[in-house]
Image 1 (cartoon, rainbow, N blue to C red):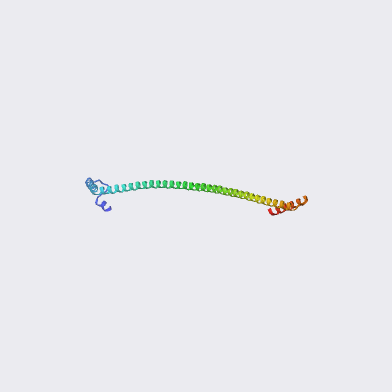
Image 2 (cartoon, helix red, strand yellow; image 1 turned 45 degrees about the vertical axis):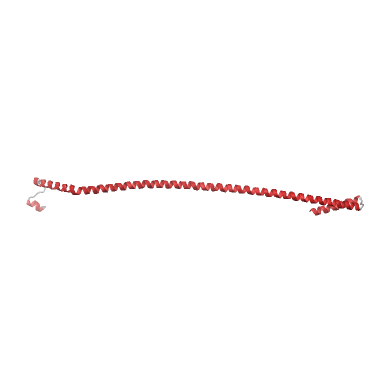
Length: 173
């Protein structure tokens, strides 16, 4: 700059010829840039803007899909919980029904066994009474035969009947 100032060239002085050539050079550079460089630069910027917009749209779409999947997942979890509760409740109900059925069956079996025991006791009692009656008849016949064979006195007869009754008591026990 010092050299330019010593030659008499001052940068602050306006030179109309220099302005014209600077303007012409500027316009030529702008024309060349517009013809060859701006279109590829603008296309590259447009392509990049479009790619960024597509990426944003894709990200939004993926976010919505993930939200839908999350909602579906949560719904399935809720449904699984409800099914689990239903299965547990059904199992409890089945267990209660089975317990009640088993209790009923057991009570029925106990009643049947009791009824069978009562019938067996009744049959045994009837058999014992029948045997006792047969023994009484046999003894009565034997006593009558012995009385007829012997002519006993009334006291002998009473003693004999008492001894036979005592034999019957001992035999039935």
